Length: 205
Image (cartoon, rainbow, N blue to C red; front, side, top):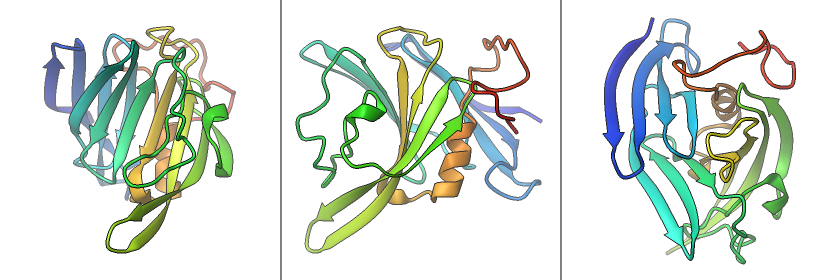
């Protein structure tokens, strides 16, 4: 059963964001999760996220002609970033600390990935891994963050061919994070599937 909870149009990016309910990906079969739908000028996807999750902030930054779009979600430190492929990553990519979580276009930009795994999505193949993230304030805290880089087979904008998903400070555990990543697909109203299997051929549930 699908129920539209809210819809928001962000004129600056022509983004259409729809939050809907779905059944039980992150909990028992009778619990409800949230289906998050994003359809804008650079990227289009929908994904099952933990119940009650919404987009709190959309950042469409453009620094020296290098743009990226990021969607900051309200729960589990979830962040979705859409980098521009022809822009070089940050020189300090190896310093994942104090609010810096890495600037990745492809998996090749990741300096020290841990526990790397390949998964399949309807958008394209994804690489899931963990990275060490440190915070130095009055005390030192270290976290293992799950991150995924999805190589989109048919991007809306060819300049933005990847989607990076992350749970800051590892607030969402690796198993639940992987399920979230595997749920990424084209928005329901636009997807055109040519087969009954996701990209890569594995079974999608």
